[in-house]
Image (cartoon, rainbow, N blue to C red):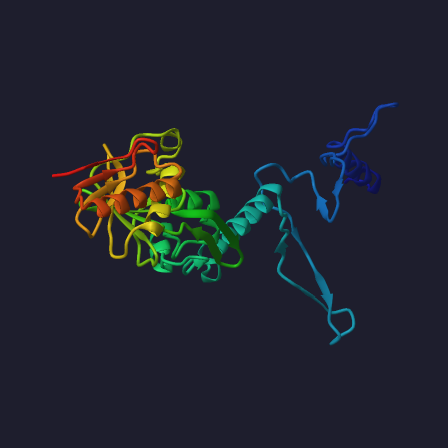
Length: 316
């Protein structure tokens, strides 16, 4: 039979067989894995387990309830949102694009028609047809382009001014040349102002001197400088002076050979030259010739004062 001492010895041998006493100076290690250091970030508790590509950390909120002392309710975790620089730039670009689209298409900035001031014969409809600004955004309007369109379509306009204002205002002001001479050549009628500038007839004008041309005047330096210049200023002034001295209901005439003149109601043609300077003196010489011929009973077919100091007449 085993004694009590044998049983105690057997238990000691059985418990110590799986254990190993550490040697002197040897450090005892644990089976657990060493934890990495904790890293903190503002507003977020980051753990070493968070790596690139993982879902953003979630916060846990514990709310104490007043029902029972110590009772708590755990709410679902909410993912933490971070606004990056790219997202902010995209939002600003989208907002700016929407603003530009609104300004470009808003009816408050759409031009209905241009306001026209200072015109006598041209109508606002004719001007707006050339400008073509109806329905355009005020941001599309270019004053320089409008000025060029008006100048090309209506050369008779002077001092053209184009003003553009918000929200949708286009104002046009200009001065029209006043027609002084109605020049007809080969059935085509052209208006000419007192400076010899030619333009198309528009509407009606009073006090215009009508003249029938049997040819075009010779080219002058002013014609070459200005594409719409038909008559020299000197010739235009001569026509106006001659018209004031011509008999009533008389139509002036222009001939490339003999110059300016008219058909006298008494039955003859009179001319005053291609360069009718000193028109008052020429008219005085003409009246003297007519008086002399009537006294002598001569009925001429043509009287020429082209050369002031050498006038002549011709009989049939």
